[in-house]
Length: 270
Image (cartoon, rainbow, N blue to C red; front, top):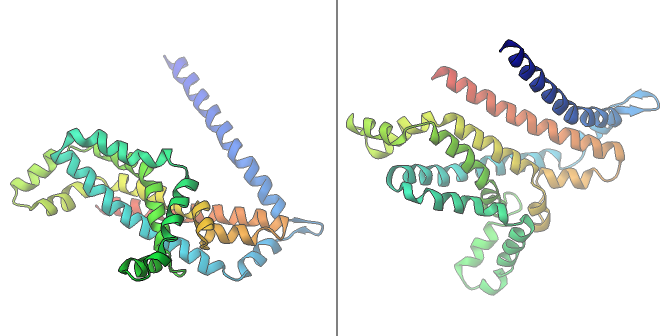
């Protein structure tokens, strides 16, 4: 028995080591290339990149889009999933099918559809829809990107929240809260939601990672969040283009680590 457990541990360790090397070696080689020069180690690619115009506005726009997408996604998806669990469990396959549909729709096709709808604006000039189409295309904060990002993140967020709901007896929790005098909204917010904290955090992390790394939709629609900015500013210099990729990975990892740390602190306090 001990020999079998030892073999399993060695097998897992070998797989994890190979997986780590698969990701770490290319990243380390890229990082070395970005700082290597004839004079030795040189960080000019990173310093020039950080001084480039538009760096902070592009990063700020991406973070704002990520936060807004997370809020919209959770406000739409969580109540729907809880309502189905409580009142209509037979609709769970339907909800799962609807949430999985974006997986079979190519991003380019989704973006082309959005672009065609935005192209109706001149024909709707005499209607209130014209102003709406103009507002959602505001360059300072393009709401149309949030409209595109939420469906993209929907399948992954659904899986994360569904995993959390499977581990919680939602109906019993709500009935217990209701028997103590809580209203329906308070029972859901005060009893169910805290038990889904990990699942909600996972869904938020996935959505943030998707928004910060998404390029196709923003580029086709003509907006410049961080992913588009690093593409346009990394073409002039080979080392700078690699530095852009390394920097974007670091920023995404830092944001995700901060979110995980905040989630752990809240769980510890509770």
